[in-house]
Image 1: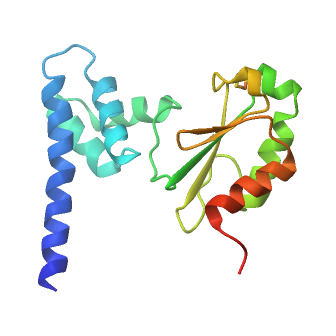
Image 2 (image 1 turned 120 degrees about the vertical axis):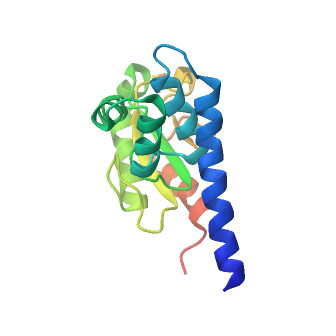
Length: 167
Ligand code: FES
């Protein structure tokens, strides 16, 4: 019980400390909102409502403006994302080499649609415009790792690497 309480406290402190650090770094800058949101997202993987309200107060901006900016840019996530971010490329090079099929294969293997997160919070699926690996088209990334020349069969194998064999 005591441990639980302590755990919660330190998590909360760490949370606001990181937001405070971001705010300090961009203090007094015109247009501080976007870099602060970027740092907060880098720290937590998304921007919670709580953190949006905190940032709005600190930057003396209306919450509606912070929410407006955070929801306008595709780079910001307003919900927690999965532990593994799966980015499937649908840029020109990947598109012509069957990127859509690769996206479908990932969606099927993970049981989610693009923009969704698995219920166990392990994976989020996203389509992107170019991963800078056009020579490996069709390509996808899981976290920082790039997978190239994908086929639906390879997608199944790759997902199995992360999920483990079926029970
Ligand atoms: S178009 Fe897919 S990696 Fe560039």
